[in-house]
Length: 364
Image (cartoon, rainbow, N blue to C red; front, side, top):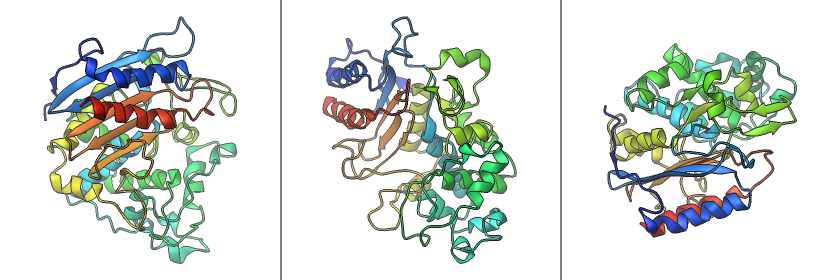
């Protein structure tokens, strides 16, 4: 499949209708929501906007961000790699969503007090974040190896009956990534690169950037808690770091052009067929959850803003990245930032995202 896109790449000067979106991002930089950002819009079958603002850090001498700058996309890994892999396996008849996790990872059931519930956790539950597993557990405080992280995830207590509670779960997606590797009989990054990124010509997307290009990637944090150094060009997420930089929940690096290529494959089905996209875009139980299979959908006070249709899917990344795709409007919007620089406490991104998406929709 060709990754070429009909391109009408524009700056603010050339397409003044996006002035409102630029204003939102400039104000965000001025208020130190993030030091810089790259962003893009795919609509009407081509790229309408692909640009960048700001710098790698707040230092006046820091490198300027470009539209092709690589970012740590954090939990966008869950959809661009892990969910995309599940979609292809499902499409090829190689993945049954009702498969119990314990059939693929027996350690999830063995020696459990709650083995009755554990036996009922399926791949569908993991994709929909309804497995009953907790949302986050800081294993890195005691774990020093990838084995220790995986064992910790396998042994986590199930806090609710599978299918009855929606709670966004990093451990759930770590386990999902390992379960998919059991189906594949190869590593998740190897499969994703060969079967997803290469066919879509996402040539800058991957795990574990080589040391030679790390200075070309905006840093995510001055880590004073765990690694005691600047995190730049290596995954910020501590558990993905312990899992050798590549995991089902985090670890991927990408840029705006590559993510727009991926979005095109959702809006104009080729790599993924329409039936598969429909299946993975459908909201899942329990009632009230905004989660589809791997993807999120717009909800009240959504980061997608007010104007994305109910037939939209998207995801966020902890580092300050987002991707929203409106299948009804045939529109995709990518925003990449390092909002965690220099420290992760700032939550200003929460108001920036919906304002940015609203400005894009108003411009169109």
